[in-house]
Structures are given as structure tokens and as C-alpha cells.
Length: 308
Image (cartoon, rainbow, N blue to C red; front, top):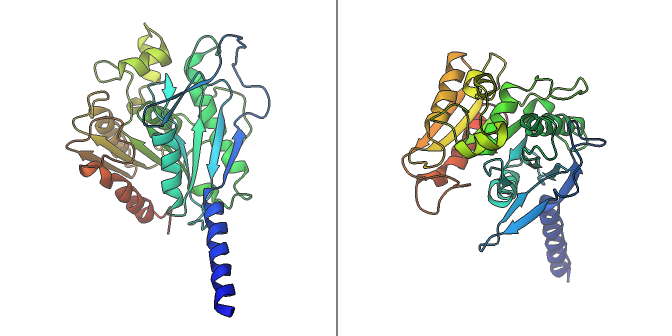
């Protein structure tokens, strides 16, 4: 009888622990009015479900963070995740939720940012909309750090494709005054950039991302200000960068140029270029070496002393 009771106790504990690990907290990024926001009755968020069940979110008007807290925190580390989608949609599942849950396995909090996609209908200055959301999301997470058992010095940003452009923009322009904020820091402790769009300069940019963020005929000055290989300073955080050499959408030179800029300023950085993998591989293809990138990233976080 004692063995049965003991077994039931362990079983119930495991169920409870799994629920804790899978528990999410969803919060609005902005508690009050969204800076630079324009009201529209015809622009409403919608979700597309693909044949494989994965979701794509479009027309975001109310940005949120979905917080996945691990059952056993590892050194208080957290990563805010920016899904890709060419600044037109968000690949919310395979470049967001799946990444957060994978981070939880290593005791790292995964926080998926549903950011606004640049659009003149709902934004006074559309190129500042995503960056405003990313800055405030970083500040919001730091405000909740004690409550969520996080270390404010170990909160990073991750981004995929156009989300990588947003993550690298936050990494290089965290102090840019795109809205009136409090004194808390929006600087990421580190960045994880996966097949990121970095430059807005042709011919290496992703044309769709550039057009949606900056418009059809952006000025040279505007392109330069959002070409993040040109915005690196000595204050830019360390980076772990992943790309495939055969990426047909975002040329691998985007990652190479950003790595070279970081190296020029002696900022710690690690670049992994895989021979094959294409674009949008998320956690990695079933076949091929891209499946190794997440393990390499965990090793980098450990060696960089962001996790134990």
C-alpha cells in the first residue's frame, strides 16, 4: 500500500511539474496607449493556419509577450524571441513557440514577442513600430524579473529572418528614442540571430522586408540607419549567428557582415555557416547539419556564462 501511495505521489508531482514547465503568461507590451499608433476600423489581426497546423499571424495591432517559464530556472537566463515573416506576417509557431519550449528544456525562459508589423494604416512612422515594441518588451521583462526569477543581466534577444533584423536593430539601437520611455534599459544582454536580415542595402537585403519596413523608395539615409552592420558600436551585445550558405531568400553575407562589424569592435561573437539548409529552417531540418545549431547555441551560452 505504501508503494502505491508513493508511486501516486511521484506521478502527481511529475504531472504538476510538467504543467508548470508548460505554463505561459501572456501580457500586453503596452499597458496604456501605444506610441505612434493610428486607429483603423479596417485593419484587424488575423491568423492563417497552414496545412501542417502551424500558424502565421498578420496585421498585429496589440503587441504581446507570451512568457514560458521553465520548471528549473538556469541562472535566471531568458530570451525574447522575434519570429520572422518578412515584416508581413509572424511565423509564430516554428520560429516562436517551438523555440521558447526548447529553451525551457535547458532552464531558460522563452518569451515570444508578437510585434506590430510596419504599416502606414496603423503607424505614424512605420519603421519605428517594431523597434518600439522590442524596446518596451525588453523593459517589460526586466520590470518583471524578480517576479519571474530572472537575472536582469542575462536577458537576451533572438530573431529569425526579418525577426533577426528586429533583434539586431534592438541590439544596435536600443537607445534610439523612438518613444518616451522610463529609465530602464532596453539593451539585450546577448543576441541570437538565425538567418537574419541585417542590411537594408541592395543587392544583399531581403527586398520584401525592406519594402515593408522602409517603403518602396527609401532614402539612402533611411536605408543606412536600418542597416545594422553599420550601426554596431562598442556597446552592442555579444551575438551567436546562424545561417545557411545556400539561403535563397536572405544572402549569407548579411550574417557575415554583421559578424565582421562585431569583430571590428572586439565584441564576442560566434558565426555558424552551414553548407545546406536554405531559409526558414527553425530548429533545423530533419536531415542536414542545421539541426546542430541549437546545441551549439546552448554551448555558447554556457561558455559565455549566461547559463550554468
